[in-house]
Length: 201
Image (cartoon, rainbow, N blue to C red; front, side, top):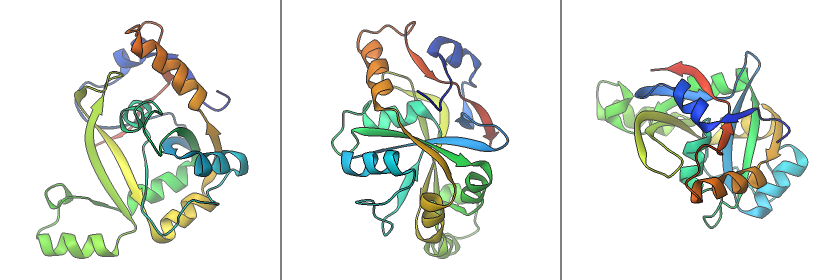
């Protein structure tokens, strides 16, 4: 892969926190890498043009995941229908921070708001939803650590798709190569993007 630094999975998992809410990502002061998976017509357009267009719908909510293995769980290592093309999207750090700042929790219990009515009003107005889901190991088993995903719509989604993207890389070939190691249960050979904690909650 051109844009992503990788490392052995066994080195990565030794460096990650084992429990709690953490944003694991490949990042620096200027950029953050997130992942999405789409059908070929959307994924190939995005990788070729460096932005989202063509068959991509700005009228629907679109979810990003900074954690590679969570994305692999969600798309079945690029085997699920409609998620055959995996994209590594390099975002401006300021854009990623703006997305997080606009987020409202997808459930009342996680929102921290005083009443369910207040949470519903906030959700109706917000352009971003946040979910903390169990992270997953390469085989898809849940872990005690929670991983973040962010759903965007409206103006935030348009800014994501057209303004905040630095680069989009189709990493499907890498995904399939690594999936082969998982299928052989050879985690010593598995490589993953080098991800460290960006933030914790």
